[in-house]
Image 1 (spheres, rainbow, N blue to C red):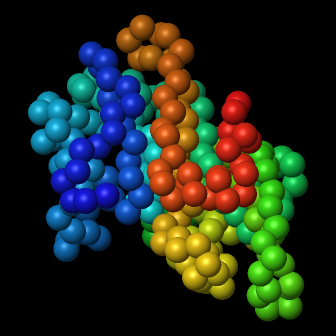
Image 2 (image 1 turned 180 degrees about the vertical axis):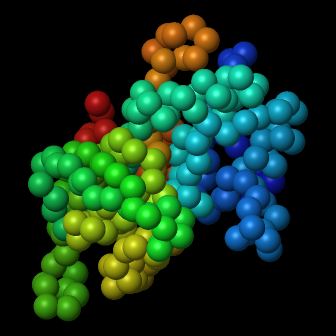
Amino acid sequence: MAKGALIEILHDDADLLAVNKPAGLLVHRSKIANDETDFLLDRLAAQVAMPLHLAHRLDRATSGVVLLAKSREVAGQLGELFMARAVTKRYLAVVRGWPDPEGVIDYPLPDVRERSPRKPALTRWHTLATATLPIAMGKYPEQRYALVEALPETGRYRQIRKHLHHVSHHIVGDTSHGRGDHNRLWRIHFGLHRMLLHAWRLEFSHPRSGKRTRVQAPLDAAWQSVLERFNWAGALNC
């Protein structure tokens, strides 16, 4: 996405704004992004011209739903919902190998600093579809991949990426926790230059009305190409 391009708005009411963050865009300024000049919050400030408060965050490489509040009061209420695990978070990922039809990864993780104390972290997953690529690599004549839905019940730093790495179902395109050989295969054969992890849906009770609210983020062109190539689009009709 070009610098300064408009951000897709998914939900807009008197209290909340939900947007579809593109892959490769940082959410906000930080000490580790001193050289960056393009941020989601800055684009939204110019686009909607009102104060906004983040309810949660996504990694730079992850696309999908980001929820924001239009007041500090509502931001606090959303924070309480996330802390109470009252927000259902559904992600889509393409991983190497064929995971079991469903499962749970219960594996403590540190915060941003790898040496910080580990905290409980739990991710559930469902395998939605599988495919085989007739491309030899290493000792294997073909490669297996799967489309999975991941539901993190906690919100640790890079939780889904680290958890799928832990069970050896690395996310395609993940340059920090993935497999370099598989990432290269996808770059060479499919021109893929992003990580295939997408924050697909958020479901929660609206902090003002109490109405059950669901926000879904459409998939970008890279994702659509993958779904078409493997005939996976039907797996998302749920």
